[in-house]
Amino acid sequence: MLEMSKVLGWARIWAAIRPPHSRSLRAGAWYPVVRDEIPDRVTILMGEREIDAPRRLFEIRPRRPMHFTVVRRVGYQARPRRESLHQLGKHYAVCPTCQWRFRLIGTPEMTHCPHCGHIAQVGWWE
Ligand SMILES: [Zn+2]
Image (cartoon, rainbow, N blue to C red; front, side, top):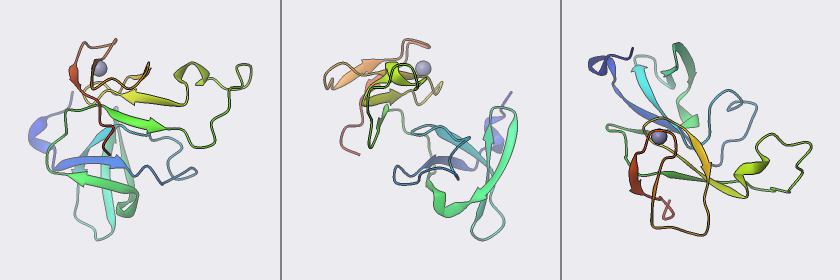
């Protein structure tokens, strides 16, 4: 279990960053920063794993924002047989508290997470 006293900040991968760097990191999700001592490097917690990564990959904030991140899928094409994320559609929301991903129907101002029930604004402005 994450001890909040160890959290130095919150990191989200920049939307413009593409794999391979971000392959294991979920787009739009906020990860706790647990170490921040080396210039240009930062250590984040992904589940139970600590991951050391270049700082430039991340947007870092002192507090975790509570709105939903919108992930826009550049070059998205419906390929139901080939794409496991197909059901998420062209853009989807990521829950700031549990990191659940879900499809957005229309462009709602507010939504709730079907996984944990978190209710907040949808960050269309980002
Ligand atoms: Zn949630």
